[in-house]
Image (tube, rainbow, N blue to C red; front, side):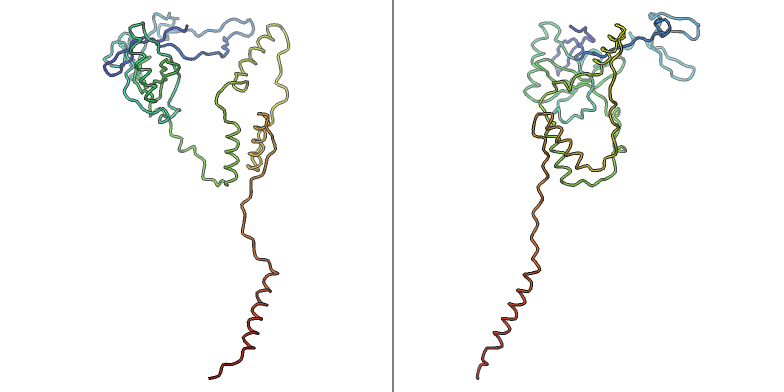
Length: 306
């Protein structure tokens, strides 16, 4: 069971739900120590006081804000905990909205909220069922690590998940990064849609969704520990060249996607639109012949008498 990161309560109107916050994710990446390569001695960061010219312990270290170049204001952890802030000890729900209306770029790490004892079970499940029936997520405010934060609450398998969110001014505008206007044909768009359809799936399970880098690092460490030659990368992948024919690249991608799923990889050309047939040149003289016959008939008619 993961350790508790923070303890407090969910403030839901006049309803209070005592909870424990635990991490919802695990870090499986491989971490390295900094070592002196000649003798494998550990290289550590020393906590050094530049005024007293000596190394200090963790108990002697605190927070300080540089108000000016030669002025630092000390701030104690006790003072931060006792600030008159409603969200200092509670996750305060401030709004409810559809999940699709929130830009995913503002959503960060996730944490599970565990009810604190049997007393919290009923209000906890009340919030769970209310969120499920409304098909909405809750937007909350809370204070962690010396700052007030924005959060998103949703339900996963009858457990409330808290996602850290970025404030609006923390997200940079992408307007200046957008490319200049380009022209796309209907065939290119249709072929791109075919590629999306071929790569669409309902889950993220399978060999292609595994961490191959971590596995390769583990094999490298095992080989060096057993004094074996580490595995090599083999043939280097070709560098991507400049796209010359976009349609050809799209069709080839669709074929590879079909082949990877065991389907027929034959790429069929797009059906061409039917165009009106032009009148042939041979039929034009027929109109002239018909005109001559009409003129001849008029000439053979007898003149009317008065």
